Length: 340
Image (cartoon, rainbow, N blue to C red; front, side, top):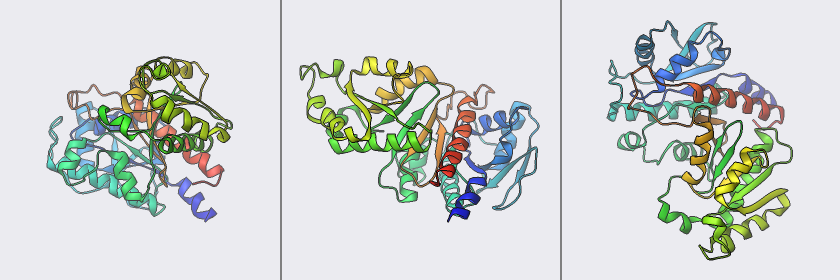
């Protein structure tokens, strides 16, 4: 088992191309065309060579895009691609359809299979269209839920990680009116525990300091603006006291500033936009989406397909660069602890 873990740790990262009509192909080509990139030999793109060549031509870049099969060595200066399916080209930038939806789902499935076979060490994902994915028959709200189903994972959490702020969500893609109904002491306590494990195992934080955000304005003002803090959130914080430095519920309008200033290592947010608005304000270009609870390492860009700028030579690869670097760092951290 130890030898298998070492082999997996040395295997390349699987980078899924995302929606072929979005900015995924463009940011991949832009990132790997930079002369200072040293991680190219550690990454295999799961996608379509022809689409990537179309993106490279669009950018005026010369990339040596080559086919890759599991176990193949990666030659220096090449961008290896595990070809999955075959898109009709040229792709119409910014115009997703049934074919792009099927393709992006196939890329994800193939990447998970490669990691399960020990041929790749981690998964980094470029953005997908949730609507196109579902129209193609993959009935999941997004990447996170699809990866949970593919790996048989019962408990997954979304972490957004950047140099100054880390946020983990109790609820993810839910209508705002349902959030209060979905919050339970068990769910919050579970989120706290998974966050602590990730901070220690994946990020090397020996004694994590975790802040739990309230749901209501001013933390509910002792029930004046809502009682979820009294009934649900505070008891969950108390139930996890043995985990160490876990505090809250903190007023949402101040806790993210305190975390970004260094007081906390992570903030537990009750719902999607509560956590992502402050996070993206700080880390719009270098933020990374990390999925907790999977039996594999998965990071992702923290932005969408950006169909409005696809094919216009405007996409910024900074989040992709950060996601690749973070995936490789997590693999190394887990390998050192025998947790890969």
